[in-house]
Image 1: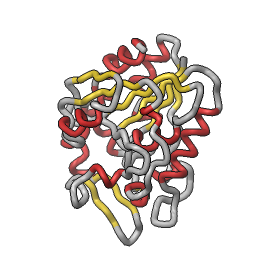
Image 2: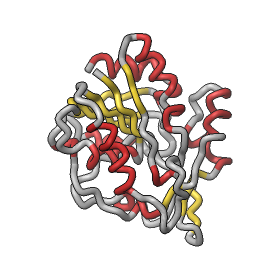
Image 3: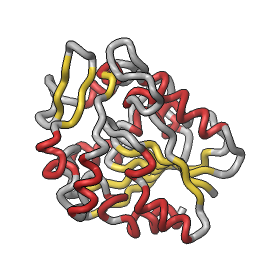
Length: 231
C-alpha cells in the first residue's frame, strides 16, 4: 500500500507539509509521495491569469496515481479535495480517499461555490496578477495555531501565490462517489469552519473527528498516521 498526498492551496514544497506524517508511515513500511501542483508555481511555470490552473493540477496528480499499480490511499487536504475529486476518478489502484478539512465537490462544482460572496479575510487576491495567497500575518493564527513554533516558522517560508482561476474552474468527476472515503473533521480549524467540514463529511463513507487545527498532519502526525494505517 502506498499513500499519495495532495496538498492545499497557496503553498509550495508539498512534500514538506506532509513530512511529519510521512516519516511515521515510512517507519511502518508505508511509502508516500506528494506530487507538485502547477497552479501553485511548483513546476517552474509562474502562477497567474495565463498560468496553470485546476486542469494542470488534476493532470499532475493523475499522472502520479497512474504511475503505479500498487494499491493506493489518496490523502487530500483542503483545496486538494477539489483536485482529487477528478484526478482519482476511474483509477483502479485507488482503494480509499481520505479528505482532511477538505472539499468534496460534485461534478460541475467549483471552489468558489463553497465560499461566501467575497474572499476569506485571510486571503489576499491580486486581480492584476491573477493570483491569490494567504496573508502572512494571519497564517499562524488561522491555520497553524496548534503547531510547534519551529513548524510555524518553516511553514511561513513555504507560502505561495496561486493562480486564482482555480477557484472558478469546475471539476469533471467526483471520485468520492465511487471510491470508499474517510473524512477527517478538524474541530479546532479556524480556516475551514468545522460546521462546513461536517457538511462535506456527510458525503463521505466514514467520519473521524480530530481535536486539531487546519493541518493535523503537522500538529497531530501520529493520529493521522494511525487513521491511515487503520485503512
